[in-house]
Length: 299
Ligand SMILES: Nc1nc2c(ncn2[C@@H]2O[C@H](COP(=O)(O)OP(=O)(O)OP(=O)(O)O)[C@@H](O)[C@H]2O)c(=O)[nH]1
Ligand SMILES: [Mg+2]
Figure 1 (tube, rainbow, N blue to C red):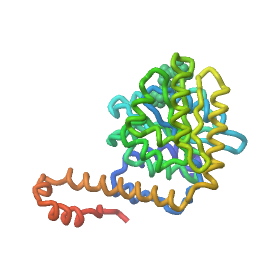
Figure 2 (figure 1 turned 180 degrees about the vertical axis):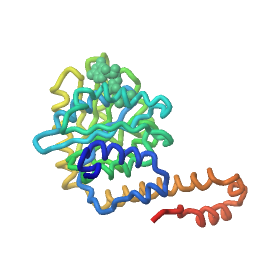
Figure 3 (figure 1 turned 90 degrees about the vertical axis):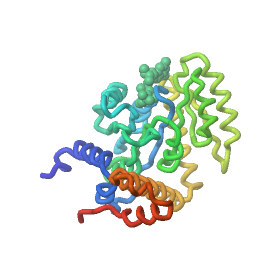
Figure 4 (figure 1 turned 135 degrees about the vertical axis):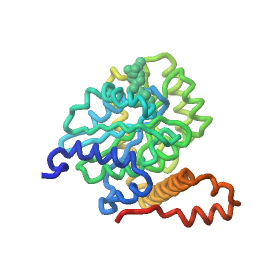
């Protein structure tokens, strides 16, 4: 018996580690083009400590069902040295950690500067073909991460906190426009109503093609808010089914992945170089990079 049939979860977990740590040539070698993309992808993003993991635990529990299996992939910005976050997420998602219908995996974000990993697209692709119906991606929203999330998932849920200045920061960065659904989380804290009405105005301005991003208040102790969020995600999936050009989505994802691979390959070439390449003029540097772009691959 091979590892996959003996313990499919452990095999998938190992595959995810391999992908997370792969260099460009390994990433290319691991591509599995034959698995069609069928999983729906929900991205939950927001500032550190916004309550994303707590919320995902509740949400995954609601969204699983008879013959409906959920995967959770948490991209964790904690230092790769301490790895403490992996344990942290296990604790916060404790209520679902041993649920046979829910698979959870935390991946440290390591090198990437945007709170994601270099291989987020590949990690998501790797979730295909394992019997899941949906993958929930948790990521800390910093800098470019929202744009990546927007490209890679079907529904973006932005988690905001009352009294944190979150909304103002998010607006400055243009992040608010990325969301399909807003959550005012920890609504038990003061300032939640004010934030809700503020975000409501933003959401109404964003209404397009019949979708106005809903604003939902959640508190970990109140199941009603999570039920509303669950419904909003379903509503968005219905809306998306008739308002999304799937070819354009697929191409945008392919473009994102190609950009990432080439940028990383350039970094690999320059890291291996003794500095000589960077002394060339731009044309010389471009030609040299072009000549070295294809990594050595084992067939
Ligand atoms: N008051 C209050 N606190 C909450 C609520 N939900 C979560 N918390 C607390 O907020 C803290 C952060 O929660 P997490 O779920 O770990 O937040 P996160 O966004 O996943 O955090 P990172 O992954 O570290 O970015 C924990 O101490 C939770 O117990 C809530 O509804 N109300
Ligand atoms: Mg978390």
